[in-house]
Image (cartoon, rainbow, N blue to C red; front, side, top):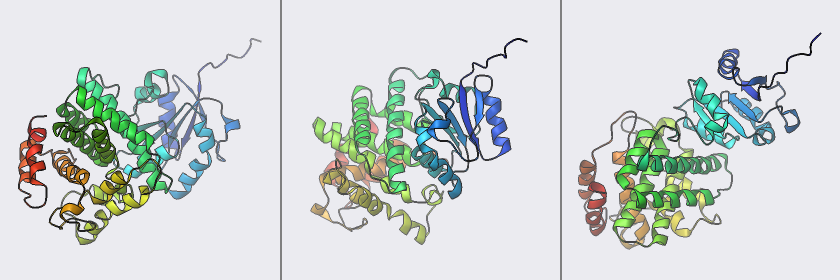
Length: 365
């Protein structure tokens, strides 16, 4: 008798919450990998046969999340851990990242892309990100920088969602990279790239950061001040991690109760980061007060005039502009000229000299 044929394919651990999902994953993986189903009792580091895992389960189910959470020591010991999630469920993406995802694939599963994520070819790639899309030149630079920014935001939002301490270093580094990218290319390239490949709150935060950096450059601020703007832009909407997606992404006007919930995000974000080592008081102030207006009509504290910091005044203009020009599923981006006219018409609410200086940022940068 001959020796049994050795299966030299690398092992990949698969966890799915239905037979249909497991069949789909097997079909995608088995040409390149030996599929090892995760046992019912879960995984611990001693059970690991390979360096990869693919997980496709309902991350809105509390029992399922706790089951996966118990396996985190094993998952974090792997070089690649891909979670398959639905694109429209923002909290599932955040939850996956918190549970140890190195990569995220949006449904439906794409066979070749999934295999690429588990090999050197897929290093750093993430479905829904803007890496590895064949971009070249300035767009490729912006794509790589924006992908890093999204990963930093995922980590930040995951910490707030889980009630865990916030680590600001990755956010600051991502902000610094965005500032460098815009200085080397242009704000227009940044805006176009982010709007094409990112969605929802992460798109908005990346746009606000870019606009604030471009504004700071137009104002002639020094490198340290521009870095403060970039960091504040990345942090400014962190409180939205706790706002229900059906409110964040609702097409049309919010009702009174929904508006009250939405308007709680500055205080939620402030409470999550204030006093955190490495997060300056200036940045925390922007998180709380980027919706304040000079005439006292803003929220949450109805500040007026000189009570509003210079950093907040810049960030408020950047935030409004980014919200108007962002690309949403239910509305196309507003032309930059029209967005600037709306800002110019907010007499008494925004600082007039800053609005005038913002014109070249809005229309030409």
